[in-house]
Length: 287
Length: 327
Image 1 (cartoon, helix red, strand yellow):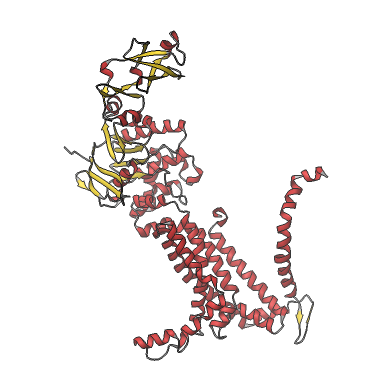
Image 2: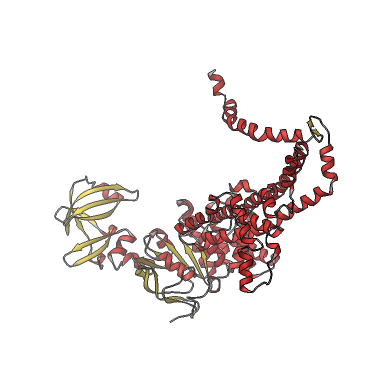
């Protein structure tokens, strides 16, 4: 018995076992289940185990799929651009312009305050603001900027992306701020000493060194937006669709095999995007 | 008289809120000299260097380089270059790109700047490592790269902020010889901040000793060591005793103090410590008035007549070895 326990190989496996079990039960098995169900068949009133490609055939054969995926990519791309610009600016301000640590922590906590309420509440609170007779429209009218209420403020792509940016910018701020705080301040002085302007320092020193943070933030934002369905439903007033909504509709109609097939395709797409992103930066080196 | 590219500090002052970091210092650095700013930590030497470099704005006074006031110019336009204490190499760039950084900022074409950077790396004997990253280099190699990066801007004054403090003692001695060689070859002014007396004595044409935000004493290394003007300088440079005599305070080098039989010398005392140091023996003597006086005796002289701890001895010296110091 003692001999067995002394075996390094075995004790290594034993140490890794609890986490592996948890991951197996709550991550691997559900995904395997989804993949399995995606090959099942369905009728109007029942689903039955099978191994057929009908769901995928239908999915790839329908023009709706392509337009919905395209719409999802559009949301992800536009949201990514805005969260990156805003997130980088905020992180830069916090890391390089706020001098005292106390203020840095205070302002950083301030950024997280919205997270004390739920996503959905934060999303819904935009509705009275953006509505036809909402705050934004009535203010603009009273200022004389517009004559009639602007229609595209709410239940449009604009409001969907606005909500996404609002919800997810912090996921960009945190990792970028984290990598920026680890940049040695003397590097910035060294760049200045070598004749770099503020902008040159930004592009030649700060951005390259903040890249891992930018990459991690991008992965957060892209996966969150790709997988979202509730924001799109609320903020577009059910007028736009993304892949998440496609899946949720199928589930509402009890079409589990078709929902599972869409989920598998979505999962593969997101993994592909992350793989491409990781090719640009080795984030493991930075963790 | 100001000639060539002399550097002059004119009542230079730096205040952080209420605290005075540098208090109205005036100094003239001759062109092409190796100067060391020497002092304990917090004496204002690093702040002075950073003001010369342009990384710290002076509260008052000015910095004049080659006849023109550079106090408010950006660092790169002053004709100075700085080598940072931790070298501050860009971790994401290769050695050659680090060295070529300032040329890239000026918009020099890639092939031209690589060629110039290569020549500069040759000067510090680092061409072999051109394509490595800083984290793949040893401390000494990183320092050479930092040196090359500073020198590629053709500075008239090179500012070094404790350049040797991150190296191990053996490497430190090798690198300081190298610094001196480079300075002689390039003929530009080096201003080197350090808290090590040995380093300052070994390198400097001129030592500037700072304490409490002011310059205590400045001059050629030999002058500062042999004729300290204040008690602080005498103690900080080391190898000196400061003795209170009825006529006032005097500094005397430890190796100029000799031991005699008790009551035969100028001061009486008791041996409190004997330390063998190889070539010589360091004796600590507690003399009248509770003064600790160190005497360095050649090894053979000591072992001709060894002494026990607690023995009564007399201390003697030549009057010419005494230098009056301010307390």
